[in-house]
Length: 177
Length: 270
View (tube, rainbow over the protein chains, first blue to last red):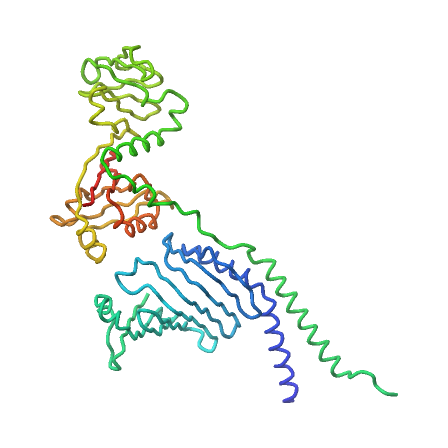
């Protein structure tokens, strides 16, 4: 019996991985772009490279409502059905935010797993410091725990006032939509 | 009889190959229904290239050029009003006549009475320093020859609106104060996009704090800002580009609509 279950699992995972490997990842990306366009978000000038289990996007420019919002040198999109992630490197956010925070973000990792299907996790690090972000779908709640850098603490005190310092000495930003 | 092949292995490989085939067929089916190309941003307009004017007279030239361009379609069909010269006028308002000549033949004048047409332009009104023509429901103002040196850019009248021009000086320090602290801007002035359907046609001033620095800019509540340095403000991006580049600009000409009249406010940034 155990042997049969193991055999089934082997075939099942083999099939899933084969399916992911054969998936037209570029086409899925184009579908994502079309969906984002509905929200006036456009990703442009990017170069796409399909890998076995992921899609690599280079030099992408993010425009929100016609505003040049960010440029990222590299993005790796991994869709494994049970675990999905987008890893961005060298993100330069529009200088429009210079008055609020440093615009350079070194890494941004956004992940979603079916083990916790109602939450999206994100981790970011850059000139502003480090941040762990969670977004809860049901409560429509965004929470960011920030470890600010020295630059952030000294030069962006106005923005720091928007964060609340909790008992652990961490800075927390919370917003419900 | 000796077996030449391992049946179990062949079965396993066959099953895996079938699974691969099914996965490939499914992915092809999905590929068929998914879009084959993505979304790209429309071509960007260059914003900074026009911020080259340094003098008031240059600004008027650009404005005149823009006015001519806006009337281009109409004027291609007939005579260009900029090629007309107003030599003299007699009468007041709806009674009287104007003496008009073409720039090419300034000595060959013609007398046109109110209500009569000349080269497709109907004389509507006599004013103190010029005359008002109409053509295709649009109005064009032609000034007396000698007063043109003062008002070079005044032959612009689009959709029943006479463009007025006012000039103001703005301190660069004030601009730096506002750009380093954007929250201050929204304390002193309220601006929101105005749409016609889905298209942005300009940015409406919703409030101006009295006695603030913004109040000295000459903008009033309900003003609709439609152009900056002759570039139409038809997207949030165009405004933000202007905001980003404001430090590099020496002169800024805002075209606004106020009470259905077009007005231009020119800021010399010092």
